[in-house]
Length: 115
Image 1 (cartoon, rainbow, N blue to C red):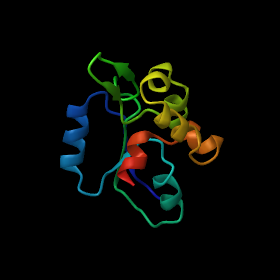
Image 2 (image 1 turned 30 degrees about the horizontal axis):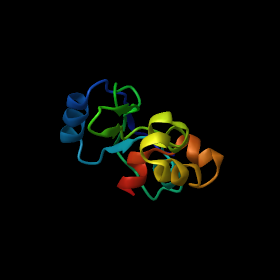
Image 3 (image 1 turned 90 degrees about the vertical axis):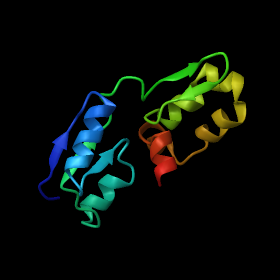
Image 4 (image 1 turned 120 degrees about the vertical axis):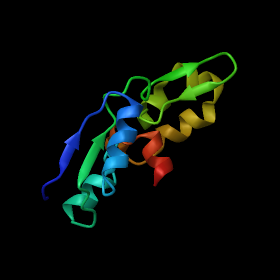
């Protein structure tokens, strides 16, 4: 690995400011793709912006009109969610079949969409 600046913002506004100030910054969610590519030096961001401290991004909510699933929700959490199992059972089943246990416990829904 090599040197980079690590940020752990607590708001989306802070994330936006960090990304705007650092053209080579990368967002870190589960790290399933980014960290291996950094180890192989295929990605060399100047800054890593860790989203894990931002409230709400790891939540699954039933608003009555919709099911809201945050970008930082892990596949295992989608698979095990009573809300998802009741409202969208196919999504819960799909999340439970993604990769192996390590991928399900570390990988995020937002990371999968971003890739």
